[in-house]
Image (tube, rainbow, N blue to C red):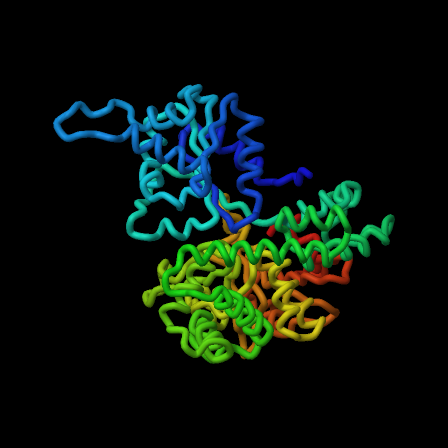
Length: 477
């Protein structure tokens, strides 16, 4: 089953770019990286060489690499050892622009990763490197090839991609519906779209999970596939740890994140999400777990595309402390104090980067259906805002931000790069009003207030915009 992905257009942009850089494709486990890259290569290059450093092809290529780069001091050095390594692996290799070499699971070899600059500069062929655990390349033995890499992140399916696969006709209607006003010619469409959005929030966007749902139209069948993917990730993660012997540590972190999400309005007891997670995990699950080990596990989840933490401004208020920034499948937001955009605080919220994973663990925590629904809606909005901060960026800040004002909180604050328009964003399940956001709007702290609701057909009243949640991906700030 082929699931159309919008990332394909970005791959084409890289191919047509004159800079001739190596493409690094990252993203969480099972997001479809290998499939879409191979499909793209098959359709746009005459020759393809695929190497997976995680399996037999990788072992064979490393043997070719070692043989090609062997050198005895005092003897003549080989002229083109990397070319020879590829030629030993694939005798039909042609070094030309119509050849693409894909090296999957690049994090398994620092030796090969550190040659990316030479791949880029010495070959006519194009290179694509990818991996699910690229957090490993932050280790000392990996050297960053600055200037020679174009980075591209693949997420799980968006709602738009899910909807197109679910119902092509409904998808076309979704694309043509007016955003901020009701279309009275097709009232039943709104109910169908809301149902599709609810289904998406329950199963998420992992390609195999979506395929399982499309085949059987059964959420439990899809969730079974999701659990399998989570288990694979947890088991594979253990290969990279020396001080963690029980994969339940990761599950405990996921559940603790859910508990923080569900009580976020009351604030955190600790100064950061990281400290709060450490406190919850050691209190509820493993008092023998050291702080260092817990932080390593959290960092791993972050760099593997499963969870993440937002950054904070340095004391002078002019730049980010990058050591606290990361892009993972769970990310907290930045906090803007009293709507002062130069007064950021460390992240106080976590969000899963896949709605299905969020739904699975939120339901395991044992809260109410309404609480789960509200949290999933905020989670969905967060993912969308984060994507808008990928290149080419649509909105400002290092990552999505929420704010406090006059003793209350505002779900999200968005400022556009073009035009510097500022939006206060409130995510509402019902008909409730956002008193804090209204106060801030009236005080001139923003240009617009955007309500995102599940049960609405859209509307506009003065500076207040109302949009169905499932239309957010079409909305341009």
